[in-house]
Image (cartoon, rainbow, N blue to C red; front, side, top):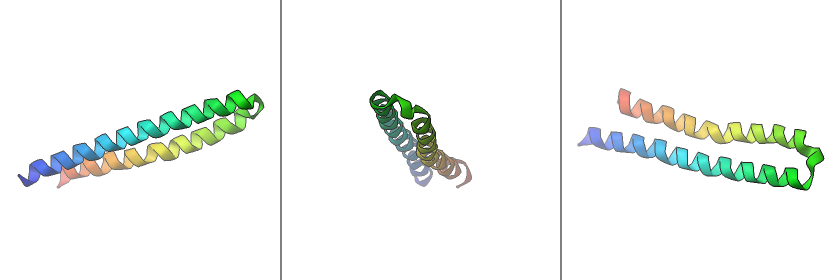
Length: 75
């Protein structure tokens, strides 16, 4: 019983991380396109900021996957 709850917790951790990351990346992409449509001359600066923000948004689910895999295989 205890082992099955660890598997469920790991799956939920990975799933919610993926959902949150997908929502965050979608919002970032939409705002980036909105900013480019308003001021096309700022495209290089906005792209740099977009990549930095995407890296930060993607880091959280990657850490979540690492913790979930640790729970599933090491515990």
